[in-house]
Image 1 (cartoon, rainbow, N blue to C red):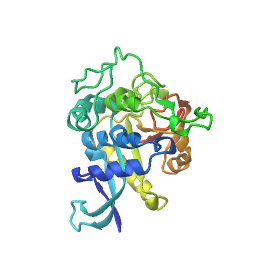
Image 2 (image 1 turned 60 degrees about the vertical axis):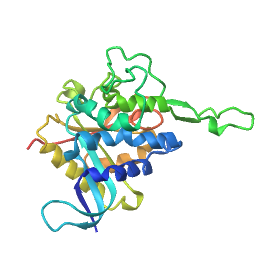
Image 3 (image 1 turned 60 degrees about the horizontal axis):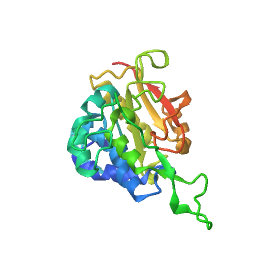
Image 4 (image 1 turned 135 degrees about the vertical axis):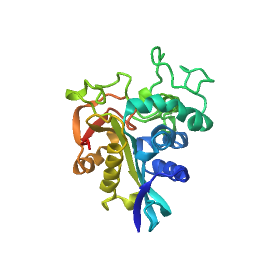
Amino acid sequence: MAFIRPYQESDFEACAHICRATLPPSLSTTPITAKLAPYVWTHQYTHLSPTTCHMLVDGHESSDASGSGDGKVVGYCIGCPDVYAFAERYPSYISSVLSTAVAPPPPASSPSSTSAPDLASPGEEEPFWIPDDTTLTPSGTAPLQAKKPNPAALVRLAYDPRRLLQLDGSRKDLSSPQGEGGGGWRATMHIDLLPEYQHRGWGRQLIDAYVRSVQASGEDFGKGAWIGIAADNAGVVEFYKKVGFRLITPPVADQGRSGGGGDGINMVIDIAKV
């Protein structure tokens, strides 16, 4: 019987597996992308904001009030209440988790730095997409549309919370007080479930748990949460609409930072103050 409980440190590898197993097609093409993906889109949330991260576990729930239990983690909803406060805490993630597994920091940072890069002078940014030379035609040229994620750009993204959270002016800032009518949607989240646990109502329950934890966090979440969806993963938009999200147009020109080929899709959900 599946149940939902808070994140535990022992869930680290299970979260990495789920992230890799549910990558959109454009990000599941190379081993290096699979290695980097959890460090770009998963582990910082569980490290810096574990109380707003929730696990779906297939097993036996504890009979006490601890919310614990035994079993296999098969999905998660992870996130933070305030992207600005999250970005300020990000050096802890770099020094404790990221720098021990993914090296080196992008060239714009000092190689010995365990802080986020200084975005006042970010330098030239690597392209997120590069030609995929593993799909050469018989004539020895790569198909015109064959692309793969650039590992250097993924590493830069992992080390740079302002780029990762799109707080660097790359889009109309939905999290700022000026964004989309004021107040901003300062929280953000990711949800992933293994295929056999999708379409069974668990996604809604995980998001509900996340929303309650954001409300209880004591942080400024503004008007609610925003999410970025990869352009090649647009099929999930209907799911998000059913659980309360709505589209914000136009799509964000994020050069693939939301995790897919082309401009990402922005959605928001309002969260009531309690």
